[in-house]
Image (cartoon, rainbow, N blue to C red; front, side, top):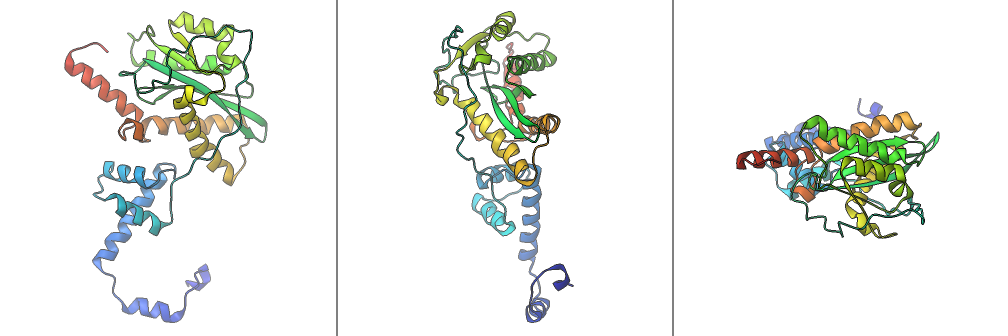
Length: 291
């Protein structure tokens, strides 16, 4: 029966296996391997040993980091690795006025949500042609607040993401105000367009733009884009081609849901973005302060 299913095994090996009883330790290890594989699959098959160890602890598995690594090797699974990104999507309008850099790479400075939002967009090749996805991320919690997929790189690509981010906050709290909030981006023409700058002003958001051609001035957003490409776009494209905008929009929505609610981030003490914001709200409530 094993041979019929393509398992190349000698008869002597099979009979030897039958005469050797399986120990309880071997059974326990087999069950742990199954649990690790299930946890790996639930997290989009992207976690390496370090994140899998933290995810296992969150799931109630009392395992050491080296033990998790050994179980992953037994199962033949490993985390995804980021590749170098060489394509530049930014095209700037030399005539458009630019906001000053109000962030200056101080990514660890925000001590609350809605202090600094960062924004950027990337391209995705599909059978229907190039599509683009823009994101807005809260620096404090790493939560993706707004996103938009489009077949074009017009200002609507970024204005729609900002509108969604504002709507996300307003749905959560009727008292939300954007006063004091900084929106940071690169110098792309979409972010210096009149329609976008007017949208920022109307919402009471201060615009900020980093140094031209310097990815480090928007490093946190570059990291989010890198995760998006590594965890969703490339793995999906390795098995089948993206068909077009509708498919990209559907899969991006699911990835953003997972990213915000389930994906743990080492930069925020292995919490999810939603957990980070809930913990902040609970802390403020205990202090009797107003967030």
